Image (tube, rainbow, N blue to C red):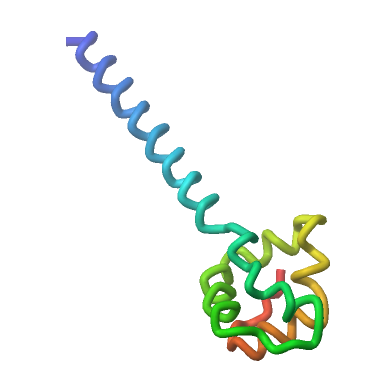
Length: 96
């Protein structure tokens, strides 16, 4: 009986580990700065954002604070053009 309980406990622990790994993988796939490439010209110049840019920006909205904390991406996300693009697209600029 004790052996069965131990095996059941191991199975439950394995499921928890597998489930948490799937969740982390899904989060990583969701946050992808490459999805914001249609916004590059709007973020680096005064050109208006495209409709594709705005839709991608809305998809990536939960990720923007993470991008701001990344030194390689911060200058794209934390600048006056980024605020303008967010405003034009109707995306609230994050306060991280």
